[in-house]
Image (cartoon, rainbow over all chains, first blue to last red; front, side, top):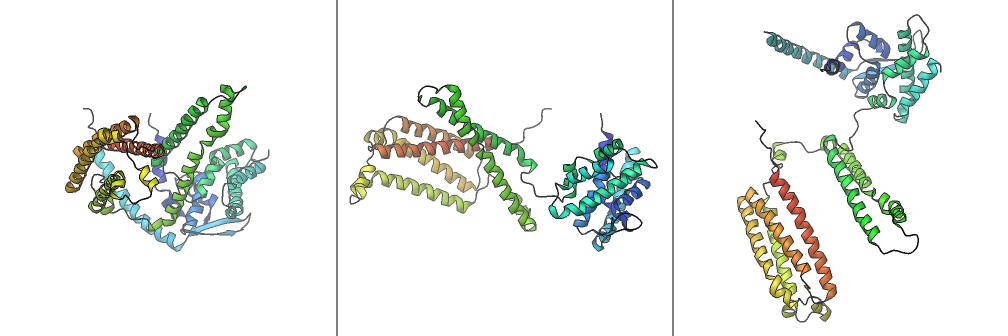
Length: 110
Length: 315
């Protein structure tokens, strides 16, 4: 039996970083970022998303700081200069890839 | 257990696997995020233990979560090498066990109470457990290699067409091969000189000359066959040198040569003395058995190389 969930998960993994970078053009903390992604139809497991933020920060793609606003201290993340640059490049790649995939899938249907 | 205590215990378990300097920062953030997740899931109601456990279960095993926080680390044993590593480790331990068990049970009895069980116990606490030095050594060497590879990082040699050409194991480097042929000739000359030591250098110390007195019967019956095999081996080496690469024919000739050398050396060792002096004779025979072992090794490697190839699929 085909494991659809696993294949779909693999498909999403490929765009995970781009999805996260897209939402961090504005400052977010972990939970709010996850909610924003869920609202836009891109649910990412907490156990995947939160460590990913730290790894992207360690790579210099994100900047972060602790802030307390109307509640407990939270760590807010946003794109760094190199993160913004990567986001622009990946967006262009994604546009090209989506176009190619669309052609491939439509061709298959014909 | 209360939800917050559960989350605290979970976070403590996650950060335990992280570098010490990250623990407080990641731990505080993770605790805060999990608490918020839990509240989000509970909605207007108060979070309970069951909901907390469900959240923690979906978050993942603490060690796996900690892995996700770490950047891709260096690999000690690459997946591609893992089966061979396991094979070499287990065979190494197995060979040691076989050898030491044979030695344990063939040793003469030492007196009352020296039964098979006590011997097994003594063996296990000495050579049996001791054999695990081998996988330990392999892991240690792999760690050193992984650290060196990680430090080299970007300085690692590039994968280039020239590097790809090195995969052709049939091609030879002519200068090195010439050196190998020269080395073989020097070795033969040294052996012939050793046999004729007393005739060519009579002034050498008597004990040295005595040590190299060769058995007449060996010289007359067994030794001449070596000349035939040396000549055949040299002819094969020169053929490889001229062609610039090994061919299937020269590989097969190499296998035949190895078999003949093993047979000849075994005959030399088994059929009687080689040197008159017992000490020189036993040392020489030990060396010859070692050479025979190397021939067997070469034979196995060459046979594997000849056999390797991608078979056509059954259609």
